[in-house]
Image (tube, rainbow, N blue to C red; front, side, top):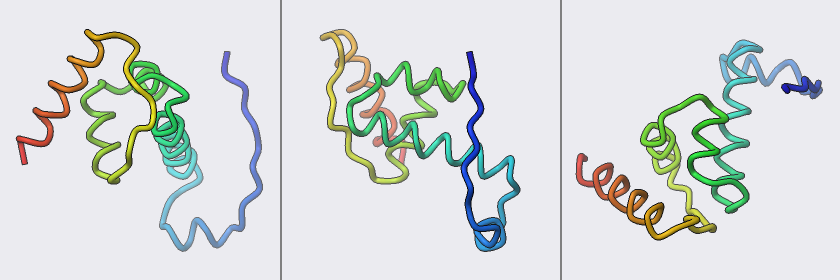
Length: 93
């Protein structure tokens, strides 16, 4: 279930960022979920799922912003997958 909430922001934020209200909603959701993942409050797969993204696309967004992850994987297999993916993403540059 999706519950909509209303947040009042100064109208000039749209002007300053050049975003539309729809873009602002999407960007806000992305930033919020990135922060939840960074704080270890949600798993990598949950974060990607909430944004309807592939895990590697989510990690690319995460590391593009130079964020640090405070949580840990839920299993050894999860840790290995995350390590392999991060290694791939950082070696491709």
